[in-house]
Structures are given as C-alpha cells and as structure tokens.
Image (cartoon, rainbow over all chains, first blue to last red; front, side, top):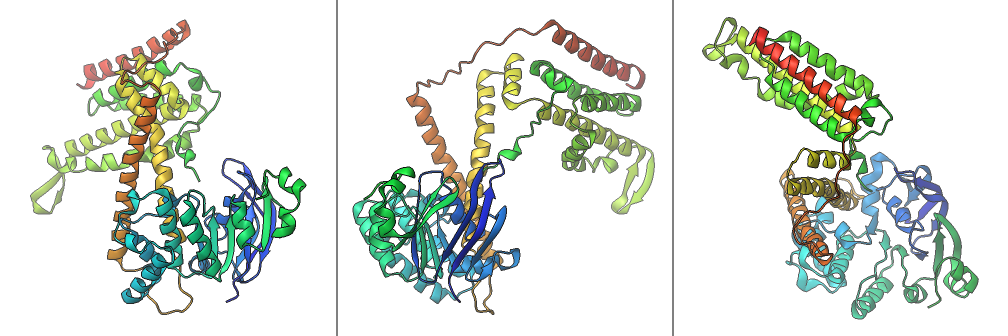
Length: 237
Length: 265
C-alpha cells in the first residue's frame, strides 16, 4: 500500500456558512514528514479532519493511500490513517487507559493476545506503561495527550496526522515525544505552533492562512523568509 | 461540529411572531388546559379547538405541514393510552382473547385522549417555533413561575447543547478509530457484548464529564460574584393591544370549555 496523502482543490464550508478551506491542494509522498503551520483559524484542524473522512469536502477530492474517500471504504481509510486530535478529551472515551488503547485493534478483530501486545507496545512508546489501569478521565492534560497518541499507535496506521501534539506538554514529555516521532517511519502530517519542533523534525513545511495553503516547501527556506513568517503570524524559532 | 440546529425557533415576521411572548405563553397554556378539560364525546368542541390551532398555524407562517409533521411527537404518549380501549366498561364492539372486549366507550375515551394530546402538542410546537428561547424565559417569569426554576430551565437549555456537543465528540473519537484491517477474514467490529460495553463506558464518561464541567462552571460563576440569588432585569408593561388579544383568546377558550360541559358534560 503506498501511503500517500493527496488533497486536490479541497474546499469546505461549515454548516453555518463559514468557508474554512478554499481550494487547498497538497500532496504528501510515502514516509514524508510534513509540518503544517499557520495562525489560529487558518483551517489546519479542518484539513486534518478531512483526512480520515470525519468531514466530507464541499468541493474537491481527498485521497489517502490511493483510495478516494467514499462511504464504502471508510473502514479501510480509518485503519490506515491515525488522527490525533488537538484536545485529548476528543480522543479518549473508554473507562480505563487500557480500554482506550485497545479499542482500535479490538475493533479490527485481532486476537486478545495480539491486542495486549499492541497495547503494551503503544504505551511503552509514549512511556505510559504504568498508567495501564488508570481511569483516563482523572489524568492531567499532558498525560491524556500521551495516552491519546498511544490510542492511535496501537492501530499501527500507515499515515499519522497529529494536531498540535506538543501543546501543553512539559519539557520532558515534549522531548520524549520528539524522540518518538523521530523513530517512527510512517507518513506524517503534523500541525503545530512549536517552531523549534518544526525545525528539528520536519524537512518540509506547509503554511496555511485563511483557508489556503500560502507556502509549501523545504523548512529551511520557509523559516528563513521573515516577510512570509511575519505575514502569517509566525515567528522564527 | 456543533449541534445548533436543534433549536426549534423559526424566525418569521408573522402576526403570531410579533405577539408579546407573555401573551403567547399564557394562551398556549390556556389552550392546553382547555383541551385537557374538554369532555369526552364533545366532538364539536374538539373540532373548534382544532380549527383554532389551525388558524394559529396559518397566521404564524410556519406552514401547516411543518407543524403537523412535528406533531407526530404526540404518538408515543397516545399509544400509552391504548389499554383504555379494553378497560372501560360499556357496549362491547369486538371480542379479544382472554375474555376482554373492545368497548364503544373505550374507543371514545381513547380517541378523546388522542385528540387532546395531538392538539396540545401542535400548540406547543407553534409556541416553541414562534418564540425565541430567551423570550420564553421572560414569559415564564411574567406569569410568576419561581425565578430559580426559570434560571434552571435557562441553564439546562444552554447546557443541553453543550452536552450534545460532548456526546458528538465522543462518538467522533470512536468513529475515527473504527478501522477495517487490510487482510480479510478478521471479525471486524467486535462482538455485540463488547460494543455494548464500549457504549456503556462512553455513556458513563459523558456523565462524568458533565459532572466535572458543572463544577467548573459553578466555580466560574462564584468567581464572578454569584451568591445563589437570581437577579433579573424588570419586565416592560404589556401594550394595550396585547391585553386585547389575551382577553379575547382566554374568553374564547373559556366559552369552549363551558359550552362543552353544558352540552356534553
């Protein structure tokens, strides 16, 4: 399966009429790591919600792994694309951490032994192995964020889409998260305000503003363009 | 993203929309009371009440079809009264197993209950669709419903949408992790028991979140000086035209009920 993300002339308007995405086109090659930056309200989260079919385009086409989003292949799309939402409360819905991380493999019909192995692996990757039987509801934001990432890792998706993953993490958690991302070889699209993260991990950056992709290229050239950064509310790290 | 389409209020510029919300609220309640009091068997009264609610629907520019479609809401309550067909003693119409009979009086009683429910629900729908929620709260205060109760209703309405949003987010999270593996043959979706357990967990989660959120909201209210006392702005007096509409409406309904009792009581 070739894990690409192809977005062609995507436009999306929310039910209240607000045009969140205007003619967005983006192509991400297999195993490429791309950062998505831009001011608040640029449409980054909206774009990410299209990548696993939670939102449907008003106009345009979205293709992941070569599959166009349709009602009958949503199951395969969701197994292939792991989206980690900005707010961990949007991601966690089970009584215990184990249940949450085990949901995706259980749903896919894996054997209990395999499920347990995957859960242990995912929790170890985010250094939350000790939290296995905790009630996710009572954890701090940073802990919940790491669990949220684990819930997606246990799915072993080909494409990872992360919405502001380091927001709210303490420096140690942030560092361990950066190390985690560095070791993963999936195709990745990460939206973030953390420009140092962008500089450290992502060779390619796309800048979004006001529902459009205004720049897309090597991170170095984008971060060394003060006019571009200034125009879209960004700062050089 | 947000469930704001649950609000039944439909803005229009009809006569009914322009009526003072207090008048509408009182008349709607009086209508429902009249429908409840109308004696069983007083069919002309029911017909007149129906023509009354129909003319209100027409005047409100909501569309008769719109209201009638929503009045299917009354159906479950009507079905709860179905046993009345066999429990009321009277002239038997048809025989049922176990020695029960469908009686004429029972059918009459059932149709009466169905008519009352249907008419009341229609009037309630017109009230909710022609009056914005804040106006309804004003109307409730005007008829001296306790301020605390009105405040609770107001908060409940607001936070119903918040809870619906929260529920939607939980379901969206589940949907996003419900994937089908590439290799066929695996039993996708898990067993019914497992799915039931997950849903139960989600319901419990929603309850916990709402509880915690209520605590946080209370802390925010207290931080802004809330001390338990509900203080609101004073109400403007009712215009004379509105008083006229109110009196005529109440008068008509009273006549209908009295007439019903005189001739069919």
